[in-house]
Length: 89
Image (cartoon, rainbow, N blue to C red; front, side, top):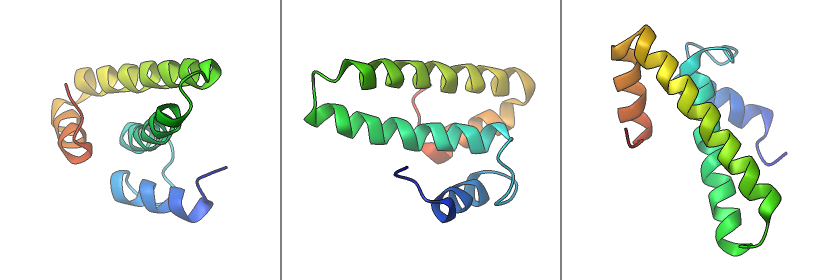
C-alpha cells in the first residue's frame, strides 16, 4: 500500500491518542483525509478511473459519518479535528 506502517503510526500519534490507537474517531478521520487527498490527486491525472472515483465517494461518506458521530458525541473534539485537518464544515 502507499502508506507504510511507520507513516500510519505517525498519523495516529499526531491525531489520535497514541501511535497504536487506531480506533479513535480522530485517528480514523485523519487516515481517511490522507487517503482522500491521495485519491483526489490520482483522479486529477486519471479522469476516467471510475472505480477509484466510486471508492473516493464511499470514503468521503465514511468520513462524513464519523464527523457527524463526533459532533453529536463531543463538539469540542469535532471542532479541534476540523480545525487541525482544515476541513470544510
